[in-house]
Image (cartoon, rainbow, N blue to C red; front, side, top):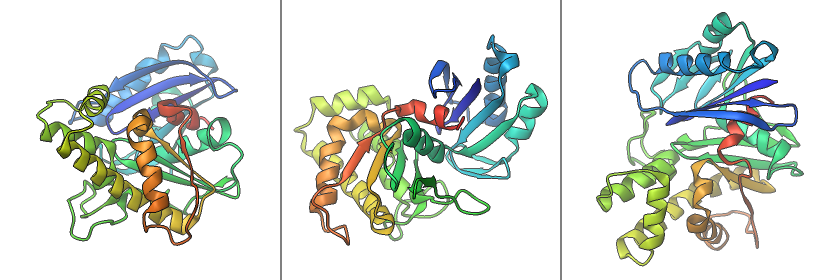
Length: 293
């Protein structure tokens, strides 16, 4: 048995995963703290792992991390405000179980390749769209990785010169314009909803689909998302693109407009009559499962 941990920008999930990539049970906690966040994450993992009846049979704890990982350490996770955090070393000392770290989007890509929507494709791209935007590339059947750091930070490519300030310190990043959290915040602020709860925002959008202001916001979001994704397509020319994270819950709102924008817009160098655009089969479980691969 293995433990998979998915540390997101706003929540942490932990699950016991069997040899078939199935989650036996799962616990989740929303991250609302802004101080001592490393301690809160560690405490949650230790508490849940030690409560597992199969604790003594656990061979590995895999952790999916949003941000830069190097030498089994979190170098930088800007949406959590974490830098140079030796979580693997700390947990190994306290739990006496081997711990490995990998970027969260890459974990999800591996899970979707082995068990989900990217199975059977040699060349593909995975994008995790939620609090931020994570990315991974599968090339010739293997996860494409850079040396030293994970790389493939599609979220921090610039799509707007001198644009909005990103948490990373740069301006105009893809993530600032196309993360689902930012979009939900803008809708909430524009319509005084006082919430960024995904289900409530989605329900509001569906109930007010004819509102002119909302149409404008939806169109702008799809255009910005299309620009970022088209850049990735132009570089890697993937057979398929899989979209995960909380974005997958908004398929009835964004999927068709996004696909139409990519095909009909003047964005792709090599024009396509169709694009294989998948929605993650494993949804928010992909990070937990992929962390154990």
